[in-house]
Amino acid sequence: MRVAWIPLLFLIVITAFSLDTQVIPDSDLRKRVPMTTVFYQDSALTRPIRTPDFTVSRDVDYSVLVQGKRWRAALSPAIHGLWETDLNGRRTYYFAGYTGGAGMAPGTWLLIISFDERGRPVPFYLVGRAHHDSRGIVDVLNLDGTGPELLQQDWAETNWMPDSRSGYYITTLYQQRGLYWYRADGLHGTRSFPLYERWAIIPDTKPELVTGSTFPQGLLADYGNDPRGGLRARVQSSDGRQIQVGSELGCKLNSDPLVVRDTRAGREISIDPSNLPADFQATFTGVRRWPNSDLCSASIMWVTAE
Image (cartoon, rainbow, N blue to C red; front, side):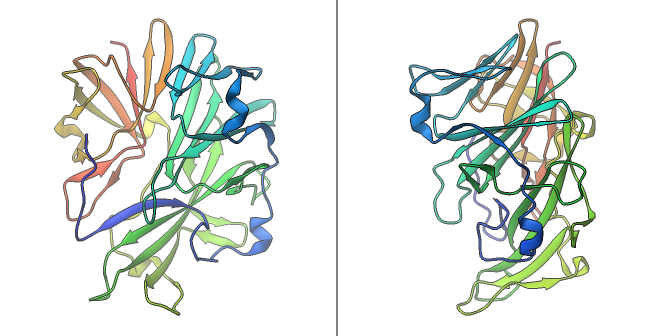
């Protein structure tokens, strides 16, 4: 599946504050969730690394394999770190790496994994510009004293100003509640989410905070990962890799999602799927529709053995 270019509207995901916007006060940004570093930087993967829940190693093709009990994940070779939290007796893992994107293209990916009562991994996956350092994911905060919250910022290029690249920064907040992450609108810390900043990319100008009523409809994405809130659709895969999604989705995918597949052998997670059935049902979460177009993207495709 090829990524399509949309000339009138270009929407890309960038995780909070890697661009020039200061919509969140420093007092809130200092409320980082403490994390334990499992490994940081690629050089640490010269040998397998073990955690209480899985082993991380490199395959012969340099892809990253995560092997647990009755589950496995195949991740991008361009991994940069892994961190862990243990809050209220529940371990959560944060993987981060690079996409190879440059300029305005999304530069990093973020995979957050928790475990259900059966020991299966439950992923929350985003492609953007997640900011991380040796201590963990910078944009995972505890603003309300209730647990992890992820700040995310989208750039929606709408060209509202003629003859100039222009659009909106959209800052949203995702809250971990149980196994899943949900977009949490409303007051968190000192700000009420979502936040909208209008900007034309002109020298010596800065984004202007505006109300949501001025924001074009259809651009506010929801990347929540609870399959109960996802969209069910028929999927076909003639070669076991490329997918064609039925009309139930209401749009055409322009990029491949992370695939979570349950089989009798266990759960498989992959950024580069293979051996998919020829015809199957799937649930899509994190669907983002492109206004004025029939294209969309999805964060995760959940596949259950039939």
